[in-house]
Length: 67
Image (cartoon, rainbow, N blue to C red; front, side, top):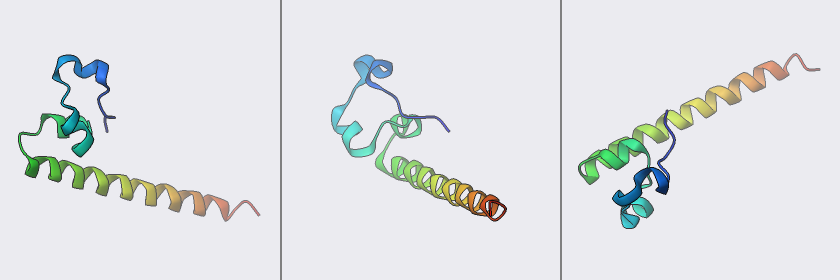
């Protein structure tokens, strides 16, 4: 998963209102409309939560052997 763009990468394409409202993930930045941006954000959030839950599960499982 790619991280968000930074201002130096966008140079003259900076749209501050868009960045503040939607963020600057590549998929959001290249989306053509708000529906696409929402879809990208939903997918990003779902992936993030799933990965965090998996990481937490692995950590808890490994701690069973700590004691």
